[in-house]
Each structure stands twice: as C-alpha cells, then as structure tokens.
Length: 97
Image 1 (spheres, helix red, strand yellow):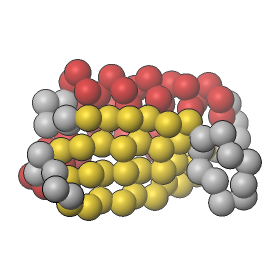
Image 2 (cartoon, rainbow, N blue to C red; image 1 turned 180 degrees about the vertical axis):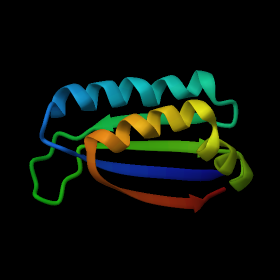
Image 3 (tube, helix red, strand yellow; image 1 turned 30 degrees about the horizontal axis):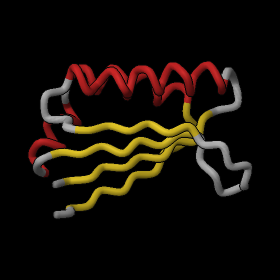
C-alpha cells in the first residue's frame, strides 16, 4: 500500500473559510477518484510555530494508482483551488505493508 501525506500552511486572508472549503473538496475526492482508497483530512489545533494548518493522509493500492490520482481531473480542480490559498505545502510518500 502507498501512503501519501500532505501538510498545508494557509495564507492568513480568509484562512478559516479556505481551510473549510479545502477540507470539503479533499474529502469529496473519495467518491470521484477510483484509485483513492482512503482519505483522512485533519485540521490542526496546535498553536506551535512549526505547526501546519491542514493535513491529508491518503492510501493507494500501488504507486501507479497514486500517479493516476495525481493527474485525475477532479484532483487537479482541488489542487488549483488549494494553490491559490496556501503559502506552501509539504509531502511525504511511502510504501507500507
């Protein structure tokens, strides 16, 4: 199984609204992208300087399935929105049993 994790740091402008919308858009992908097997979206509550605002954890059966997800039109729509409202993001991808 492939695990794909992304952390997002949002811009301050309309931060709460953009986090909420991003969370909804991301969760909707489970119904729209067949290769996506699991998604968990978490909104951060820690107030540390190093804290990020939102995280996603996703699961795929294979690396090929992750690649299909990456270019899926529904995923790209979400990416287009998120790119407009985040300062930056970080990613971790790994394989597990």
